Image 1 (cartoon, protein in one colour):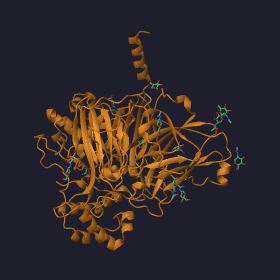
Image 2 (cartoon, protein in one colour):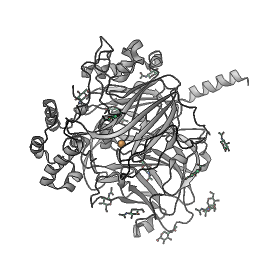
Image 3 (spheres, rainbow, N blue to C red):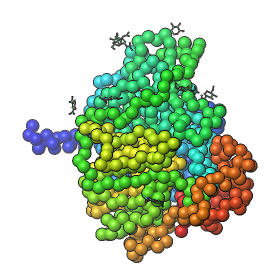
Image 4 (cartoon, protein in one colour):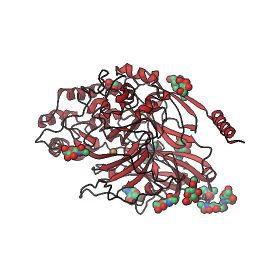
Length: 626
Ligand SMILES: *[C@@H]1O[C@H](CO)[C@@H](O)[C@H](O)[C@H]1NC(C)=O
Ligand SMILES: *[C@@H]1O[C@H](CO)[C@@H](O)[C@H](O)[C@H]1NC(C)=O
Ligand SMILES: *[C@@H]1O[C@H](CO)[C@@H](O)[C@H](O)[C@H]1NC(C)=O
Ligand SMILES: *[C@@H]1O[C@H](CO)[C@@H](O)[C@H](O)[C@H]1NC(C)=O
Ligand SMILES: *[C@@H]1O[C@H](CO)[C@@H](O)[C@H](O)[C@H]1NC(C)=O
Ligand SMILES: *[C@@H]1O[C@H](CO)[C@@H](O)[C@H](O)[C@H]1NC(C)=O
Ligand SMILES: *[C@@H]1O[C@H](CO)[C@@H](O)[C@H](O)[C@H]1NC(C)=O
Ligand SMILES: *[C@@H]1O[C@H](CO)[C@@H](O)[C@H](O)[C@H]1NC(C)=O
Ligand SMILES: *[C@@H]1O[C@H](CO)[C@@H](O)[C@H](O)[C@H]1NC(C)=O
Ligand SMILES: *[C@@H]1O[C@H](CO)[C@@H](O)[C@H](O)[C@H]1NC(C)=O
Ligand SMILES: *[C@@H]1O[C@H](CO)[C@@H](O)[C@H](O)[C@H]1NC(C)=O
Ligand SMILES: *[C@@H]1O[C@H](CO)[C@@H](O)[C@H](O)[C@H]1NC(C)=O
Ligand SMILES: [Cu+2]
């Protein structure tokens, strides 16, 4: 066959083989009892929870109609890890690439998949995925290089679990009565959306297990009694096999592993998932840190006696993903054309609330979605100003090599996620204990970079330390970069990359759909406008959403923290605050407000009231002031 006819042939076969999957899913609250100890409402599709695992093949088209079946809440859907090449508006995050879908409306997510491997989908509207709006998305690959290495495929999801809904947790978390920004403590972890799970296996078999942490907060360790994981894929990237007995999986990360079972069926084994309790501000005595699940070879033996908890000598020897090697031997990208350097800090603003900052800016949603502004701003769309001063907007040039240098000045770990790309992790510094000062990346004194860096779409940064991520800006679109801990995203730990804005506008595939426009107009959100909602002068940002003013002089964050804590602690006791958040003690509000001589304006009080009054309704604008 001549090359041209061969290419034509391949093209036709790919057309013939590509399938279109059309799904209609309606969101709604469903009664469930995931951990077996507490009945609550979870967000399901078509009155069913957990959500379905969606399976497609490389090249397929997805037409997913998301029907917002809630009574009042908005919603959105993000397909985590998908590049959305030429379909940026299908990416999901509200005010970044679309308007929130209002109750009663339907939004078509229509795109093709060009990648392979293990992905997931989840709401990108404040807190909803923690309430269960999350599911597995698998893209099968006929040319999977390890296809002969296993007999059967299995999915395994992890997450933490709260008994309260996000509609209760978020307002009390983002409150001046939680001045240290203590994250709500989960009641449990889930293993495959349940607990005490039995995994029935057959002897002498190799399973391909797709592991996804669909949680919104804690990383988890995963380990098995007397069995090993051989990693073959992370976040949709095939890697050279590497075997470990202990995985560490942050929220939103995926590991696909091979697990070979034993030949002997006389006994069963423990399969443990463990919370990374370093991430918790307090550890309630009744919180189960190590959860036992079961690898069952012999049901009779299991009914007689379940395997007991399995312990490791040390939890510190978990597999460090920095050392994985991509199977395609991709090499370190060239030196960067452009570097985005951001410092991460958590601190209080003048309203007493604890926020998260990149370079002193806490992400505050614009009035018009950034993607709409790309279309509205004409030649000005390469000027970051039009995207607002409080969105951490960076404009990238087509095909530039970009470094994101992230210096974490905070004492916590954070898993960072970039939409629209995978990136090479070229450096990750060790943890700096909080008795010392944080370290920042120094270009003239850096570690030796790997020749074949690992790449993926979520990486963690260690406390008071840094990471350096490198990618090529070859996917025109507006891409959100943020901490995947939902609490921290709610605190504003996000930035927006506007990649090749002219390329977005000139690509006919990117033209905004009617569903896009309808969602915006339902809320009265102007489409043809800059971040301030101004459609006359793109460079005029008056009236834009901005963060609260800093603490007034004379008041330090520390002072506020001490004051609020002393008032509340006197009332309740410190441990109670951290464990229960402030959800149940709204009645101390008055006392604390009197003690706090800070910027508590009417705007703010109204917000607090509406949070209480409007069940299920906290506003995206909770960190905004006009
Ligand atoms: C889900 O519900 C919608 C209507 O609300 C219906 O059109 C659709 O067929 C249902 N989907 C499935 C997968 O059952
Ligand atoms: C798991 O086991 C605990 C302790 O026996 C029990 O309370 C809980 O209901 C179980 N959960 C599930 C989902 O089976
Ligand atoms: C839905 O989104 C609109 C526009 O951002 C917002 O004004 C409204 O408060 C949201 N509704 C709820 C219930 O959060
Ligand atoms: C999905 O997008 C494709 C490509 O633009 C288009 O041909 C198709 O009509 C769209 N599907 C629907 C239901 O609009
Ligand atoms: C997790 O649940 C899925 C179906 O919901 C099932 O196919 C799979 O076997 C379960 N995984 C394990 C490890 O039990
Ligand atoms: C294990 O499987 C292999 C190949 O399927 C087979 O040859 C072998 O006999 C099996 N061993 C045992 C102990 O079952
Ligand atoms: C099971 O038996 C096969 C051969 O029968 C052997 O190759 C394999 O290593 C054994 N597996 C284990 C886990 O011992
Ligand atoms: C399964 O366990 C039972 C009870 O411990 C034992 O009697 C039986 O031999 C085991 N079966 C196999 C196939 O190993
Ligand atoms: C949890 O598991 C780890 C690792 O096996 C062990 O070091 C630790 O003691 C366990 N904690 C509890 C409370 O059992
Ligand atoms: C496997 O991981 C170890 C570290 O755990 C690393 O030293 C080694 O280079 C890795 N090998 C491959 C092929 O990934
Ligand atoms: C990658 O490199 C390894 C070892 O250097 C080699 O065995 C393998 O064939 C290479 N793979 C590709 C896709 O080039
Ligand atoms: C953030 O603000 C602090 C204090 O005002 C200042 O010292 C620092 O340079 C600012 N950082 C950045 C990256 O702008
Ligand atoms: Cu974080």
